[in-house]
Image 1 (cartoon, rainbow, N blue to C red):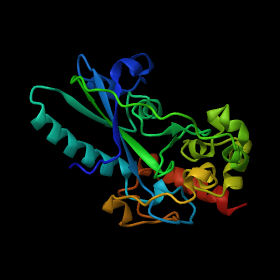
Image 2: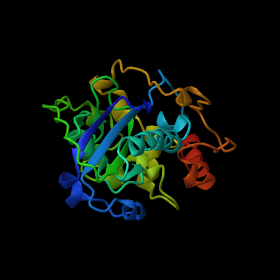
Image 3: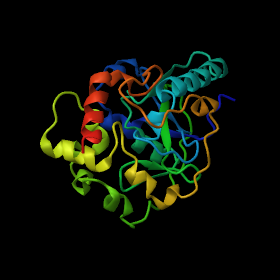
Image 4: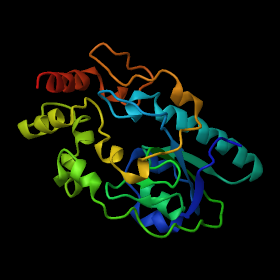
Length: 251
């Protein structure tokens, strides 16, 4: 009813010792018992540009939060007296781990969640509650061992050292080292990176997203004057964008 068909349940006890330190951690319900994990597809079809696929779309934080708040309202009416707190991205929950426990998919070699129908082109959100819910059954198996994600990565060492991930480097504020600039040049992207996802066999023919907002205002190629309103990466500011554009365009 809330527009979140890809959801499952993970026991809070399974993630309690792996909680991430962030300000949102203070919002966890007292005596939390269950984590409702949801995956939302953002795949709208083939896209080619200079930003990652998620960055070309409307801010997924806003879109997913709206969906989660709708679910929260329905659940609060169905279970009066129970607490439900919504989280997405800035979450104390280790999202991929919780999603695997909730039976939504398996962890890929690149650390991303791979779902059966939508591949890895999904963003995650959670509703943490003090309501005890029966946990979902995790899926068996893994992503396979083809190694294509590592081979396609501008810096395969990023699989053991996340500080070398191009997606993270494009978000890094301040001056970059020569090596970091070279990796961004090699990737040819000014925000985010989809190389590991684009070559993944599980992403050969993913189903398109059911979320109408993701089809509105798609901007796959950005420049220094692009309107950053309603973009998931606007919080990094225009200076980071301009620096990355200079790096990519001056190669």
